[in-house]
Image (cartoon, rainbow, N blue to C red; front, side, top):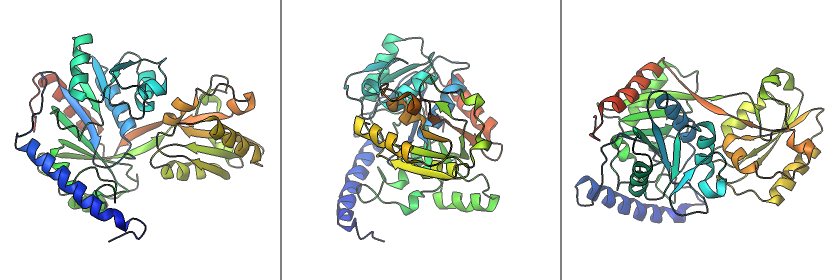
Amino acid sequence: MFDNKNVLLYPLSVIYGMVTDIRNFLYNAGALRTEEFSIPVICIGNLTMGGTGKTPHAEYITALLSKNFRVAILSRGYKRKTRDFNIVIPSSSASQSGDEPLQIARKFPGVMVAVERNRVKGIKKILELRPDTEVIILDDGFQHRRLTPGFSILLYDYNKPVSEDHLLPYGSLRESRYNIRRADIILITKTPESISPIQQRLFISRIEKLPYQNLYFTAIKYKKPVPVFDNGPSAINLDWNSFADNGAVLVTGIANPGPLEVHLKKTFSKIIHLSFPDHHNFIQADMDKISNSWNELDTPVKYILTTEKDAVRLRSFTNLEEKIKSAFYYIPVGIEFLNESKDEFDKIINDYVRRNRQNDRIS
């Protein structure tokens, strides 16, 4: 049951669990005030501390809804150096907005992206600045109980079953796994594409989802590399099949870089992985380490690869040598719905926005 290195943290996780359980009970009982809005609000979140693939799923839903609705995205802006409400634009810096909101703003320039720690205050400010907004996507707001969203989507990492995890700080759970019942849709993320129907049913049985909850499996899809800086060859001209005898320095500052490393090992003969903490604030010493690792690679052709989220922060280091900049690429990530469930998911989300002008729970 216990990890010997962290066993002293277990009593703290018990206390933490008691506090979060009492807090959730008070909200559920109506003893603590929560606020609703007349505009559709879709919350995307998880029970664990990162690593579930939240950003590519948020981008998928943003792309889906922005075809027909005026969309705004509200995020906390994790690890940004500013504290007040901010509108994120493509020219913003990661220190002003946080890396994930900036990534989304650059990908969807027509969508309003804002950051605010207080989500109720943030929604009010969005509606004040852009009253024609038709739907707000709440990025990572599942534990923000002061706001009652109209629709909640919970992400659940297939490779890290919540039933085998523990509460913080002993484990990575932000709250008890039983709070999964607050979700309208459960997305099992990072699912192996080879999963069988029997394996899916066994997995679902461990979750013990309620009858009103829809559940879908999604898989991560890695796309062709894109230059971090403007002076590299375009991604279209890169032939991944020709990389078999070449090497790469992999630079990651994300919660779970393992799947990306496994994916790249199928293509590259040699990889040096420089792993940094999630949302790492890169400094010049890190860039020197990256450059030295690239120079040490003894393959005839070599690259520096990173994630799209890390590229947002790394792009500010414009003083790199040209040979380093031209070798620097990020790997975009998308998602794919399994079991041909994409159309059903899309319909549920679109129907909610169309029909729920008042923020009523559809479940």
